[in-house]
Length: 188
Ligand SMILES: [Fe+2]
View 1: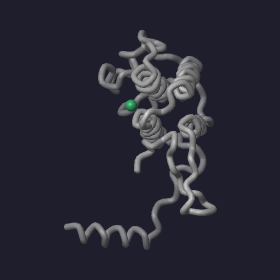
View 2 (view 1 turned 180 degrees about the horizontal axis):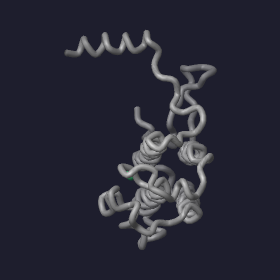
View 3 (view 1 turned 45 degrees about the vertical axis):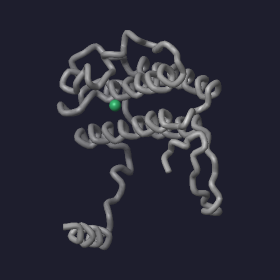
């Protein structure tokens, strides 16, 4: 099953695993957003706006790109609304603006990127309240996209030695690693 069934995503209940708990799409979006913001809470605006590693985007580009993507797929494609910032569409399109250029362009600053995220989210929640999530596919797309970008941002932060306290999480135990190697060997 996909998160697709989304607004009606069934998540295992810790109390009774056979009883699904229905989670509204807006709640899932907000949950992922809290994780995104927690990931960068220890950084300054300067940290977010500079190139931490030449292979990676400035983190503030990822934030505004997440906003642009959500606006495109949830507000525009699903909700039928005009883009909130059509003037920013190319700048925050990953194909139009490849990584190598992102650190050389005039991007939204941290306050601007965070405001873009908030403004789009407000529109998304209105769209979802008006239209519902449809079959949930586009909500799932947006959720997975933001999660994927938090991993990209982690990668940039790791390369710069700027991960938040407690990250990365402990690796697999020796036993788990051996079990994985055994399982992999069985695939050959
Ligand atoms: Fe992306």
